[in-house]
Amino acid sequence: ARLNFVGTGSTVFAAGPDGLLMKSTDAGLNWKTVNTLTAKNIKDVAFVDASHGIAIIDSVSSKGQIYTTLNGGKTWTQLSAAGEYYNSIYIYQTNKAIVSGNNGIVKRVVYNSTSNSFGIINISPAGVTQNFTTAWAMPITGGVLAIAAGNSATMYVSHDAGVAVPTWTTVSNTSVTGTTPVFKKISASDVSTALSGVAITTAGKIFSLYKA
Image 1 (cartoon, rainbow, N blue to C red):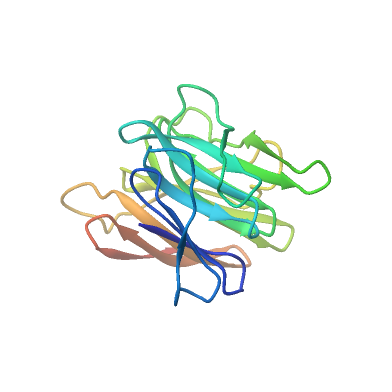
Image 2: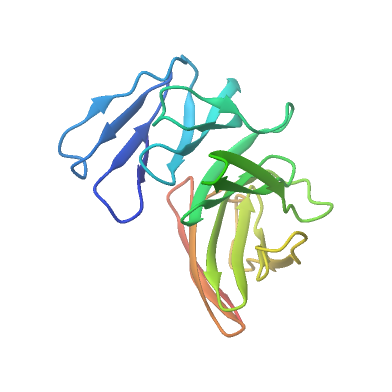
C-alpha cells in the first residue's frame, strides 16, 4: 500500500490493489474505507487537502494513468493522455505535484482552487526514453529543484522545474555497479549550486547523492 499524509496534519490516505483507498483522520490510529467506485489497482496517491487528490490508477496491469478527485476519493476523473503511463507522484507545494512515468515523462500537476480543477503541464527532459520510476521536487530560492530517476544509473536534475520549459542536466552515478538499479524514492537538498541527498532502489539499497 502507498501512504500519503496530507500536509502536516493528521489526515492520512492509504491506497492499494483492487481500488483500495483508506482514510485516517487521527494519524493512522483508526481507518475508514473510501468507496472509490473502481476495482483497478491504485499504484500511488497524493492529496493536496482532504478533498482534492491525485492518483495513479492502472488502466491495464502495471500501466497507470493520472486521475484526480474533488471529493476525497469517492470519484475519479482521468487527467493524463491515453498511452502515457506513470509510476510516481510527489507533492512539493501546497497545490503542486511532480509526476513521472515511462519513456522519460515528467509532468507538473497543479490544483486551481478558483476553478476547482486540476491541470497537467509537460516538463519532461527532451529526448529521454528511460522509464522514470520516481521524481522528487522542492522549492528553492529562485526556482524549483527537481530530480527524476528510474531504471538507469543516470538521473536528471533541474533547478528551474517551475518554469514552462525547464533545463535538465544529467547526474551519472559512477558508484553504482553491478545490476542496473531501479530507483524508488529520492530526497535531496540544494545549497547554492551543490546538490546532496539519498536515493533508494526497489532492491532496498540506499545511495548518497552529491553534485557540486
